[in-house]
Image 1 (cartoon, helix red, strand yellow):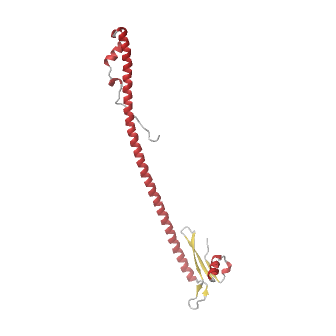
Image 2 (cartoon, one colour):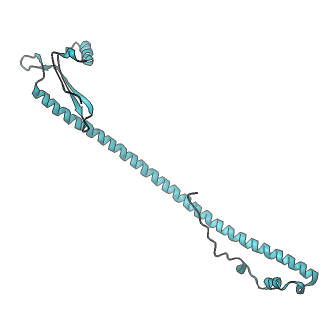
Image 3 (cartoon, one colour):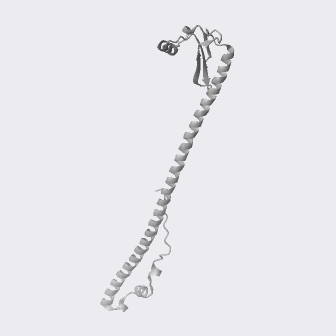
Length: 193
């Protein structure tokens, strides 16, 4: 804790190098001083009120500061500390508001990018499903072609009558829709990967 400093004609007992330098530079002579700390709500010193050379109004003589002046200056220091603290709190609040607004803007931009990415994934999934359907159809036709080539060889070698019964039945009754169920394709995507 800091103490109020109340000095009269004993200024040499304390370090007043600042006022002494000022005195020397400007031809001033500090004889009395009243120094009051300005404390915030946490009892931290955030400034100092300093009064130099109290004067007798009638004689213009430098005198010590009265207890009444000390009380008044203590009240003034308390009010000044409140004003400074409030000002700092307002600045901190404004800075925090700016940070929140910046984070909200970043969130909007990220949501927009995520939405665009999800839309692109959906479009690619549709194309992938179409490609898988085409591949299944091509594989089926390739399978049928291979069987027909084999059947052609059988025909060449001895006719349809020499084919085993299962292949004859398969060739005469199968269709693409029966062999490949292309309506049941389900592709799941994981946006986290």
